[in-house]
Each structure stands twice: as structure tokens, then as C-alpha cells.
Amino acid sequence: MESGILNMLKGKNKKSKGLIMIMKTTKIFGAAILSAIMAIVTMTGCGKTSQKTVSTDGSTSMEKVIGYLSEAYMEKNSDVKVTYNPTGSGSGIQAVQEGRCNIGLASRNLKDEEKADLNETVIAIDGIAVIVNPDNPVSDLTMDQIAKVYTGEIDNWSEIGGKDLPIVCIGREAASGTRDGFESITGTSEKCKYAQELTSTGDVVQTVSSNPNAIGYASLASVNDSVKTMSVEGIMPSDETILSGEYKIQRNFVFVTKKDEELTGSAKDFFDFCMSSEADEYIRKAGAVPIAK
Amino acid sequence: MKTRTGKMKKTADILEKIMNFIFTVCGFMAVAFVLIITIFLVISGTPAIAEIGITDFLFGTKWASTAAEPSFGILPFILSSVYGTFGAILIGVPLGILCAVFIAKIAGKKISSIVSGAVNLMSGIPSVVYGFLGMILIVPTVREVFRLPDGANLFSAIIVLAIMILPSVISVSETAIRSVPREYEEASLALGATKTETIFKVTLPAAKSGILASVVLGIGRAIGEAMAVMMVAGNVANMPGIFKSVRFLTTAVASEMSYSSGLQRQALFSVALVLFVFILGINLILNLVVKKERK
Image (tube, rainbow over all chains, first blue to last red; front, side, top):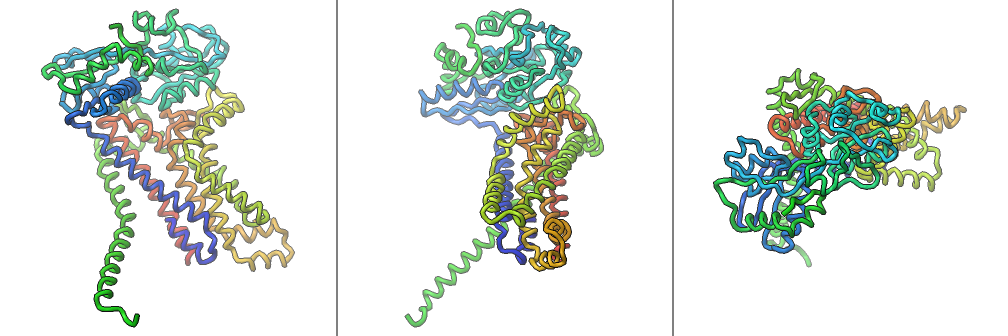
């Protein structure tokens, strides 16, 4: 289409610099689209096991944890490559079952039928913080109130001890692990009435910090000073309250492995590294709480 | 050196042939890419449409792709994209045309080169930057000005898109305005028309098909934008309303594709196919506009 306009205008004007600029950008866009499609195509396959490669597959919520752990591990074992395929807990569990990866990552515990042929090992616990704007006087909510707020039953802050302002529920996109965790723990799956569905934790924090009406949720690690963290049922989220289970909105990060097939070589070594106390530091860095060892 | 020896000539011929081949291959590369994309989208986009049913898919008003009983209606996305694009054109095109008039006709050489330099720079700014600015500046402003609970809605998206289409609209219109023969304007001025009258009654009508092309190019840009829209539109699959959180066709694909599976993934390809058909249609219209001008 660009060449069409170009030809049309060329006869009359030689200085169509701007137009050429547009043409160039359009072409670059084309190339970008193509490479994106190629990326999608290649992404669909899970890294097949080969020597010195440890493949992990699963929960997108565990991206940070697995990122820090694999980085630290690869720094010490430069001949090993740890791969991570962010597909979601369900797909990760399936990938282990089908032998498409060494370690499956799930941000939930295994269901009974899955436990038949799979082992689960909790490596860390993730606390999901409920956050509001710093100007909001409300500082504590019960689980029931949180559920009612997110399902739209409570739609004004004055109903739960705040100012007379509408409540704006900020959440994550449908496929997000954090959303899945939050909704399943608060019992609001598929019932939430969101004002915004954002695609990253950072966006949620940014949006809540700039809107006095907003309430949102995010992994505890990603929460910073620009927002106020709520206590739930009177308990603030922290390493201690999450480990003790007092803080309610939390879930396990789980390594899933096959029952009838022991990990060997680098995969076992990586697994052991993640379970050692050495890994605690990296799990903390990634914002999760390491389990007591 | 009198004449080339036979051997040298032969080598030159072979080289000539090889280069010719390379040029041809590169020439058809673009065609091949378009074909590959089209075939890929049709193959991966049709199964879900067949499974969901074309009317349920195109005219269904509920999108719940991860629910226990999923529903895949993309009418909210289609309408949001159409309204958003239309709104952006409504705001961006008049602004862009007037700016193009300023660059081509009003401003002196120095100022006009500064302004058009800025416009060119604008077209190079990545869309995520527009989105970020929209998120930090436009969304809170919209919330306060209109006294809304939340500012991430169709209106904010329209504003951001209107700004983003400006460079395309301005540069193409500017070229079109500059290519209007001088004699037309001189005749008008000689007949006693003022500069403003000349611009609106002679120059712009004479440049109209170039300007129309700029509008269509703007539509193409607006309907295909994903990143910036994702950051300011709220992304909830509502039926569109000016102050409602909406999800565009582009953002529907972008926000769920990274970890979708099964029918959801296929349905996202179908959404991409619908978007592709839209853009194909826009290109056809653009070609028609340009062809008409050539005659």
C-alpha cells in the first residue's frame, strides 16, 4: 500500500522524505510481527531433555523464583543450562507426566489424581498482598470483605470503614498465576468484577499507587512503598506470618517430579540446590518465602 | 585495454546472473512473508471459529476464556477496536491536517524544519513509551477531570491513539499539500482570496486524496496498536462505553497469548485472524483511494 501512495505522490513531489520514513517503519513492523509469530511457534515446544540441560516448565507465578535460582545455579555450574518454559501450572504438571521436561512447576498443590504418579516438593511459599492507595484510611480487611469487594457486593469504601468513594478493583489478566491464586484462595473464581485487568504486577502497583479508589493484589515481594499493604484478618503479611500460615492469602510453590523415575545428573543436582539452605537467599530475593529447613 | 577477453566476459555474465537471481529472491521475499502470514493465520484461526460457531464467535458478547464453562464472544473486542479507532481519527485527523498545513504553508523554512523534525521523531517513539505516558499522565487526568472512579477506559485509549496516529497523518498530508501545484494557489490569491480561504477552498480540496490516504494509514495504525492501548484501556472484556474499561482486538491477543492453551489459544489466533481481515480491508480501501487519484 505504501508504494501506491509513494508512486502517486512521486510525480508531483520529490521531497517525500516523511513518507519514506513511514514506509520504513511499516516494514519494520511487518518483520516484528513475523518474528513474533515465529517465536510463538518455537515457544510451544518444551525443551527436550538433553545432557547438561535441566528443563523446567509450568507456573508463570514462579518465573522470578526459578529465574533467580537457575541464574545462581548456572553461575556455579557453567556447563549446565537451566531452561524455563512459562506455560502455567496445569501445563507444567502435564509436561512432567508426558516426560517433556525434568521438573514441573506448580503454584498450587497437586490434586489427588495427580498424586498417583507424581511427587510434589514445596520449595517456597508465596504471599499475595492486598494493596491500596496510601491515602486510603482502611488498613484491615477480612477474607469475607475482600471477596465481597471483588465480586462487587461492596462497591464503596464507606461500607468498610473508608471514605465515601467508589471501589475500583484492579486485577490481573485471566491467565495470570497471581490472579488464579488470589481468586481461588478468596473463593471468587470467575466472579470478580474488575475495573482493570493488567498484564504485570508492576502495572498493578503503579495503578493502585495513582488511584485513591483502587484496591489490587500482587506478590508480596513486588509491593513497594508507593502503595499500602493491608492486613488480612488482622495479620500483616510477612515471612513469619506466611510461614506459620497465619496470613491467609498464600499458596505453595511446588516442584513436580515423576514418581517412577528418579531425577538424575544435573536435574537432581539442580533440585537439591533449590532445596538447600543456600537457595533461601535467592528465593527471598525473588519475593517468596523459603520453607523452614 | 581494448576489449574484454572472452573469459572475463563470461565471469561477468555469471555474476550478472547470480545478482539477478538474488534481486529476484529478495523481491519476492515480501510476497512470501505476506503469504506465509496469511496462510498461517487462516490455518490456525479457523478451527476455533468452526468449533465455537461463527455467529457465536463474532457476535457473542461474553468473553470468558478461562472460565469452567468458557465462552468466546468477541463482539466487545471488535466494537472497542472500531470505536477506539474512530475516536482517534476524529481527534487526530483534524489536528494532523492543520499541523501539516502549518508545516507546508504557514511556517517559515526554519520553523517548519523544526516542526517536521519533531514529527519524524514522534513516529520513532516506541509505543510502550506512549502507553507509559498515558498511564502516568492521561489516565489520572481523565479520572479527575471527569470525576470517574477510574481513568483507564476507552476515552484514555482514544487520546493516546490520537496522538500516536499524528505522525502518519501529518507526514502524508504534508506531502500531499506540498504537491498541490503552486499555480492553483496563486490564481486563488490573485482573485483576491485570503491565505486562509485559499488553504481551505483550494489547497486542501486539491490535496484531498492524499489526505484521505493519510486518514486510512492512521486507521491502520490505530487499529493495529496493542502495547499502548493495553496500558491505558483497562483490558476488561466489556461491551464498549466511552468511560468503560475495554479490551481491543489487539490487546485481547496480546494479554492472553503468552500462557494460553487449547481452545483458548486457538480462539486467540481467530481473534488475530479477524484483526488481519480488518487490516486487509483497510489496505484495499487505501489502494482504491490511491488508484482513483492516479486516474
